[in-house]
Image (cartoon, rainbow, N blue to C red):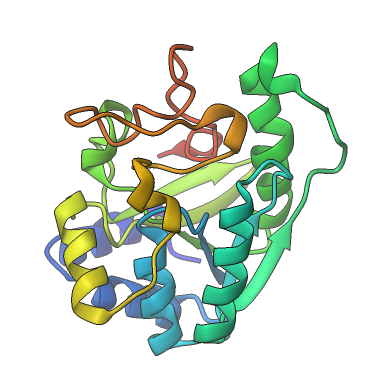
Length: 227
């Protein structure tokens, strides 16, 4: 496992690297100890496509909240089969029911955060498609970060951190990568169906998530502590 200083030094080296180079570094540096999380609703398909070219043995974690759109499940299955992904599906320990109506933070915790928090301690590096331009809460994201969770150190790798939404779509089109069908129906960020709506022209990419609630994050990228 790299130290916090070593991670910061590597982050400086990779600051201008393209996503493929950053991914390759993560796979080579943390053999059998790196995982990619993908919701199959956005730019994560870019990383899943790249992983299929670099090392198909890397676990691709999908958090099955039991509240995804039917289109998400269908697309996930087709994409994973097409690219031979090592798909790992995590589910909640309990079914909290329609908790999203009264306590969306708790709902996200039980359906997303807790299952991943339980699983991620088996890895030394976690790859995700978070980008700086997605929201104000993500603007400080760096391609490589050192985090801690429950006494466990983990390197978070964000190969698309400095990409724009336009960069993601350019990659998808130039490489013929399939994407979620609801993206053609006005959705710009796709999560669970009770908490996701289409966005209007000019709205922020994640404006359709937990609309009107003041909530901006599900907690997946806030339960670890950056050091």
